[in-house]
Structure formats: structure tokens, C-alpha cells
Image 1 (cartoon, helix red, strand yellow):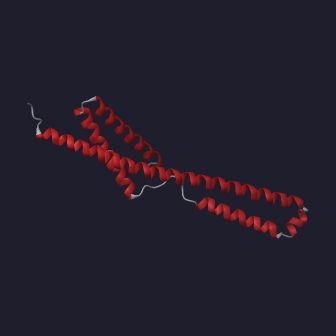
Image 2 (image 1 turned 45 degrees about the vertical axis):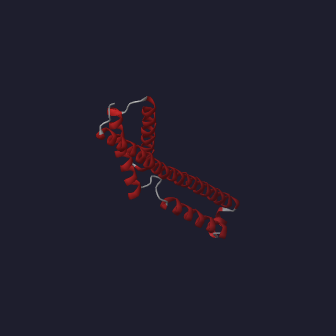
Image 3 (image 1 turned 90 degrees about the vertical axis):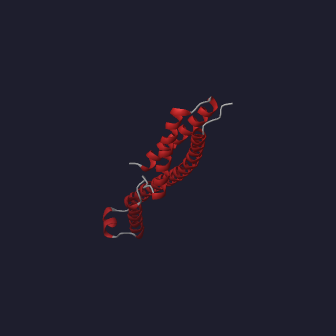
Length: 160
């Protein structure tokens, strides 16, 4: 009977732990990216709403200005025109001072990204050198592909 070498057993246990950590950190990074995608979608909706409000305010202003005589319009500024001008100014201020769509990654997010990247490198090196068995290879390939796709999403969201 051939006994497996202790170093081989330790290497497999270490690799299993690496795969488990890769799965956990990939899940964390995916949750962070999903949250950021929702924030970006909300900001885009806000931009569209601000743009629509500005266009509507300008349209109302033009409509009111065309309803009056030019001399009457220049002579007396109606309260409606003043309120619409104030609304346009407020909307422009909101639009211009709104944070950019590209987010900055927090320290925690960068740490999770770093962990996933390094665990992925370690797991792929181990996979290239020692993994045997179709089922195990398939499982490792799936986890590696999932981690790579989450890293690609992270790069799109957080790296300019």
C-alpha cells in the first residue's frame, strides 16, 4: 500500500482553503460591485430627471415670455418668471455639483480586490501544476472564471 506524502496532503488542504477563500472574497467583491452598479443607476436616473426638469423649466419660461408683450415682459418681471429662473438655477447647481459617476474605491474595497487578485494568481498556479481529475478541474475552472469576471467588473467600476 502506497501512502501519500504528508507534503502532498498539506498542499491539497492548502489549495482547498485557498479555493474556499477565493469563493468568499469573490462573493464579497461581487456584492460590492453590485451595490456600486445600483448607485450608478440611481445617479444616472437623477441626471436624467434633472435634465428633464431643466428642459421643462426653460419651456415654461419661453412659453410665458411669448405670452406677453416684449415691452411688458422687459418692464415687469413677473413672479412666475422669477420662480422659474430660480428653479433653473437650483437645478443647474444640483446637476453641476453632483458627484461624478465613477466611484472611488474605499480601502476595504481595494483590500478585497487585492485579496481576490492574489488568491486567483495562487489558485491558477496551483491548478496549472497539480490539479488532476475532471471534476476537480471543472470546479477550479469555474471558480477561477468567476473570480476573473468579478475582477473585470471591478476594473470597469473603480479603475479609471
